[in-house]
Image (cartoon, rainbow, N blue to C red; front, side):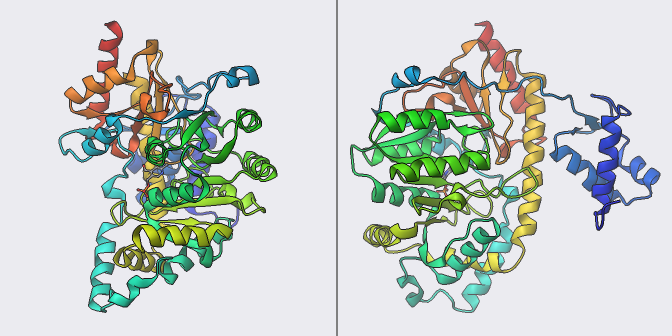
Amino acid sequence: MREKEPRYERFARELESQIQAGTFPEGSRLPALREASERSGLSLTTVIQAYRLLETKGLIIARPQSGYYVRAKPRKRPLEPEPELGGAALGAEEPAPVRIDELSLELFRESHEPDVAQFGAATPDPELLPTARLNRILAELARQNRFSLDTSVYPEGCEELRIQIAQRAYAAGCPLRPDEILITAGCTEAMALSLQCLCAPGDLVAIESPGYFGLLLLIEALGLRALEIPARPGLGLSLEALEFALENHPVKAVIAIPNFSNPLGSLMPNEHKRRLVEMLASRGVPLLENDVYGELYFGDRRPAPARAFDDSGSTLLCSSFSKDISPGYRIGWVAAGRRFPELLKLKIAINSGTSVLSQLTIASYLASGGYDRHLRKIREAYAHKVAAMQATIEESFPEGTRVSEPAGGYLLWLKLPGGLDSLELYREALKSRIAIAPGYLFSPSHKHKDYIRLSAAAFSERTAKDLVRLGRLVERLLRG
Ligand SMILES: Cc1ncc(COP(=O)(O)O)c(C=O)c1O
């Protein structure tokens, strides 16, 4: 027996070996929770924890009002990577100015309409945010009169928050110095300042394709041009394609989300992260790394950002607390290394400093010690939502649908069957009060027309029926 192994883990391990031995074959129902608790002599809570652990590992699945079942493996409908493009084919990729139309703004607006099933925007589940706790901290700080005028004069951000961020980065294997961290209004401002610091209008940046459309909006607003580099399910940015691009184009900066990219949810292996930063350092090209989903891992431990492998200091690491604490507080940051003075100057020029009210509340929350517990809870909840959503898609979408296997975060990337147009599906779904993000938005050249992105943050027992309705709509459009 392993030392100090919690009871639920031991029970989960025993059950897992029974599943592997075939005692519980694929699709079979596991003993009900109460029954398992009585049989094993363990508490109901321990059994629930064990079942949840197996669910997070993708071995079993909960069916509402029915119980837990052994999941079919391997997944029936994995998202297969597009064939890797060779050098010649990549040469066909041309740098292009970015023009993303009104559609993406429409998506931001719809994400607030109450009667629409919100599978479109990548906002976190409001029930998985520590809102009540933040409210209490805010009230307490106000009572102590902490929000005085003089605290607003630090454009780099409050020291206590920068220290908290540096300590967490250290624990994630990525040491940062508090004095290189600039607090920003969300990850969006962190990326905007970084891009403004690294590039001038007309410059070329290499981006992941499919890639986060908020970034495309930013590239457009700054008058930059983009070169799309294919990202692959499971692995992220293709390093072969990137190398080819760097050899053939005057790329000024590379923008990537190595930990749980949006929309693919891929996790770049450490070896690739190392190769990526080495490849860029040897060419003097900076990396703008976005780690906004880094804490939402489904594996055993938090993956380190690529910045952890960079000895050259040419990676700017951007992140925020928007996905796990609150999108509304607008607290993000960039670890800018030697470029800190330039970024600080830009920050002062653009908005003087980030809201002290938000900064002190988040800093106090981080210092209070409940953050890790909160993260454990939401990681488990998102892994559960993602698995349940994948299972519903497998059951209710037509043959030929392919779905991604994210390693963290809460986004799913779907390939529609029969080359169905995602824009048409988007319009039709909206008439049925279902919001989705059409693949069309995830590339400046609108490459991924027959893909959609769905957010599992919005998936629950209540919205499962909306997803089933979406599957029927896909079926109907497919039949023409
Ligand atoms: C990859 C990525 N970066 C940045 C953001 C926005 O972050 P923030 O709200 O902190 O500006 C999002 C939100 O969807 C995102 O998915």
